[in-house]
Image (tube, rainbow, N blue to C red; front, side):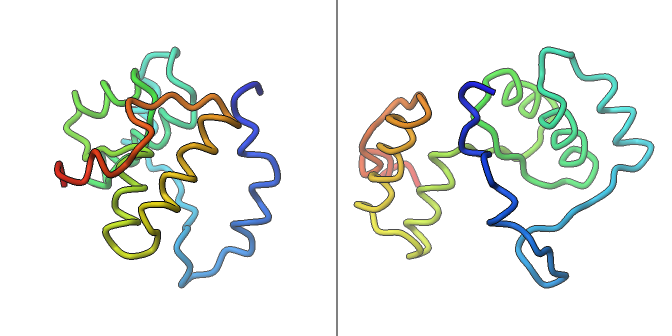
Length: 127
């Protein structure tokens, strides 16, 4: 799909799944499935599934999609997006500010990611 090339070969980065790994597969329960079905079809089904799970399990939700973010806000689901993840990685010392900015610039140039800023340091004061 256009604009989702970053998913190409994703499985190479997340397989094999391990019980102590950072990524876990979960199944939806009946309440989550009902919430999923109640969401508008203009949301991608993966966003609907993640939102439904986050709502019922009181988990956070990561998305840059405006409609998905609106729904998360309406459901009072804790929310962040790409910029928040990059800022947290910098704050935690996992990335330098320069490396975070480089990742952001690559996202813009390679996947047409839209961002309100090209310099993450302008957001540090908001942390």
